[in-house]
Each structure stands twice: as C-alpha cells, then as structure tokens.
Amino acid sequence: MRIAVGGIEHESSSFIVRPTPLESFGPHSRTADQFDSLGEANNIIDGLVKGVRDAGAELIPLYYGYSHSGGLCTPETFNTLKARLLSPLRAALPVDGVLLSLHGAFSAQGIDDADGAILEAVRQEVGPEIPIISVHDLHCNLTSTMVQNANAMIVERTYPHTDMAERALEAAALMVRALKGEVWPTMAIRPLPLFWAAAHMISAQWPMKDAVDELNNVLKHPGVLTASIGVGYQWADSPIVGASTIVVPTTIPSLPRSWRINTPAGFGSAKTFGSGSP
Ligand SMILES: [Zn+2]
Image (cartoon, rainbow, N blue to C red; front, side, top):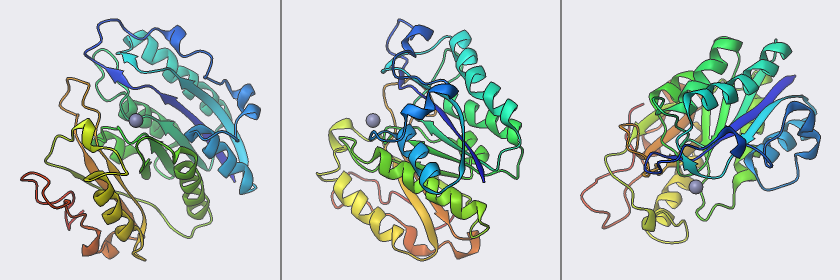
C-alpha cells in the first residue's frame, strides 16, 4: 500500500499588494528527505504522515510547502511549488493513493483556485483510478475543480483551529479503507448562499457551534463516510470566494436526506447550509 503524502499550504490575500515570495516557503517546508521529522505535531501534514505510518502503509514523501499568510504568489512561484510537489510524485509512480495538505485559500496572480490547479495536476499524474484525499483549513474556498479532481476533501471543524492532526488522521483512515476496497469515496458539494463573517466562525459560539452540531448529526448517519463545512476565505477578490458543505457518502444512491445542515436559528435570511440533493 504505497501512499504519497505532500502539500502546499498558503492563505493568499489579493488585498495585499506585495506578492508572497518563494523564499517565504522556507523554515516550515519539507523536502521528501526531510519527512522523517514529521508525524508528531498537531498539523495536517504531520497527521497525514502519522496516519500512513500507523496503518503500516508505505509512506511516499513528496514535498510540503508552507508559508504564512500573505499576498498572491507570482505564477513563477506557483509553478515552482507545483513542480516541487509533482517531481517526486512522478518519480515514485505508481502509487496507490495520494494524501494532500492544501489550505484551500491558495491563489496566485491569474490563478484564483491554485488549490484546484494543484489537485488537477496531481490527478493528471496519477490517473482517474487512484484515490486522492485532501485536507483543508476551515477558511477554504471549495471549488468544482477541487471536487472534480479529489475523491474526498476533509475540512477542519474548529476555530481557533485545534483539530488539524485529527482531520488528517481521519483522511488517512479513509484512504486506507479505500485501498482495502471497503469504500470508494466521492463527493457532493453544496455552495452556500451566504457570506460568512469572520466574527461568526468561532466554533465555540453561535452560529458556528450550531452548524458543527448539525454537521455532527450528519456524521452519525451510516450512509456518510465524512462531511465538512468550509466557511470560505473572504480576503480575496475572486468569484470562488464562498462557504460550502461537502458530504462523502458510502455510495451516491445512499446519500441521505438527513445530511441537510440546517441554518442556526436567526442566521439572517439564509434558510439552510445544505441541500438534500448531491
Ligand atoms: Zn484558518
């Protein structure tokens, strides 16, 4: 069971004039030969590495690029980061599965959905039969490109963020189940008709607490492998900005009506966070 692990994490704001330079992907980034140091911290990439190791699978390290939040990357920086991820993947093929840590708010100049572009490029490398599962920050703009190229996406449920490794371990466990032939993850996404203010994203308070409570009800359903809410990343001037819900059912026909995630009481005029159809 050869599982490739890597990622590129950047939260890119188009309202910051200075581009994030390649050099910013420095001290916290890891090349493939530096993955031995990963696995213990409460980060998504550490959780993915730990999950693969604990499952007794073969870890195929790729590249992990991390920079603090900043302005958009230049296309050159984006292409360099993408090449750093794809080159070791290409050299390691064939792999059985790919686990990725992608923030979900990564953009470059002229490339609003850089996370989607990364997933699309990875899909082109591995082909349609290899499962790809990605894990994202709560502040993610989930797009159709991402959904079309990943088998499952899992989003943090806490803000302030505390469940990074937990969500990554969930992704690794789902990957192992897929590779054992127990499940074949696929996704339904529902963009939400709302602009989610940052002050209302705190998971210990209404309305985020109520939304996560609803999400937990959905997660208890036997027809659901996993489900997520992405609240969006609003500090980008792009049509992809927005909140979404995602459900990964055991099979599409079993997608239950109960995956509807109701809007917490009093939440403006929006009626639901979800929908009953995929
Ligand atoms: Zn965040």
